[in-house]
Image 1 (spheres, one colour):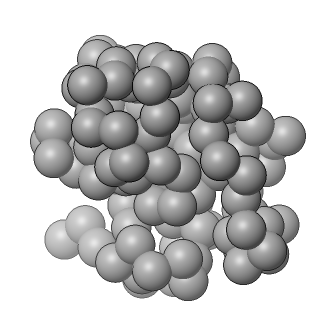
Image 2 (cartoon, helix red, strand yellow; image 1 turned 90 degrees about the horizontal axis):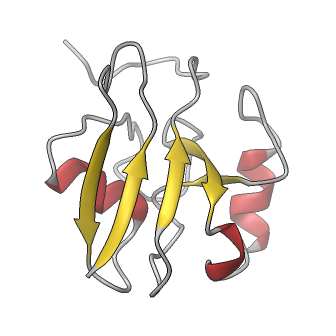
Length: 112
């Protein structure tokens, strides 16, 4: 298991969290499985930017983003060099520290 430290987010995870992820699992899957309700409007199909995260530590341990992910990342709010779509970033052996951006470009929220 690999540790993911989630930095505090004012709505989704106000206290921050530390969760365990299985190698090969996406960051999004690990967060959702641990009751961190990150948005994922396209159901993790790499068709939006709502699950955008910034990988503050451990970024180099992730496989490179493919062209489709890169295209969507270009549309993400608050894009940084260490940005990834959490539905596409698969966890490896190295621990990660992730930040969920304050805002998301989302035309249809899954939160009701």
